[in-house]
Length: 237
Ligand SMILES: NC(=O)c1ccc[n+]([C@@H]2O[C@H](COP(=O)([O-])OP(=O)(O)OC[C@H]3O[C@@H](n4cnc5c(N)ncnc54)[C@H](OP(=O)(O)O)[C@@H]3O)[C@@H](O)[C@H]2O)c1
Image (cartoon, rainbow, N blue to C red; front, side, top):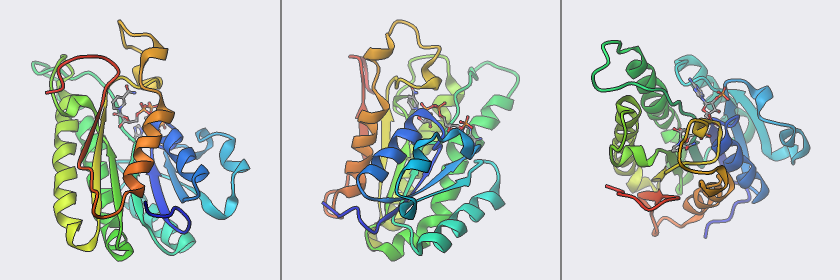
């Protein structure tokens, strides 16, 4: 496995359940972590209690192109390198196939697909320079199969899977490896409307964070393209 010390990972959605767990896990294992959040005050007190030499935060709003570049620039200025990008930021929202109003579809596309795609574009030069750059995209089982009426969400996550495979191709020769993590229900705010499943039976964010760290730590010769993680038996495709 690759050592964590000296490696710098950016994590978007660091104020959310999954992104926050991933950022804490990476910090605890010795990585330097640059946390991106719409509101950095929502990250939590742990960021003030950790090793300040290995932590920074910056505003990340998926739709703000200039702000995205500013986060990358600030990370390089602070740590001098970028070895990993984890995109955990994302939104839910119901947009059904037959909805006349397409605004939610557009929002989902901007936040869940174009935001991560842009962050890959902006960080790829640094990930290539690393020689073992890592990209982890938090997608969803909704990026693998359609089992409900949330068509817009599924569209955005299916498209994110295409982004993942495009990133694998773009970075391969320079040691960049990209992994899409596709969970079912995860015990976070986004799952507040889940029916028929108890919170404790969902995937826990800390468990997902361990998988993400493993994907980042695996050597170039053991690339994991997709990780499908479920908390219930059901069709995966
Ligand atoms: N929870 C599940 O059951 C589940 C299942 C499969 C996949 N996922 C995916 O997992 C990822 C993380 O979700 P979560 O479960 O941790 O939910 P969450 O707790 O609601 O976190 C979502 C995160 O995304 C951020 N975000 C939302 N809109 C954004 C925008 N326009 N720009 C930048 N950041 C934005 C949120 O920021 P604020 O704190 O400012 O709102 C928050 O940090 C998402 O991509 C989601 O699609 C979740």
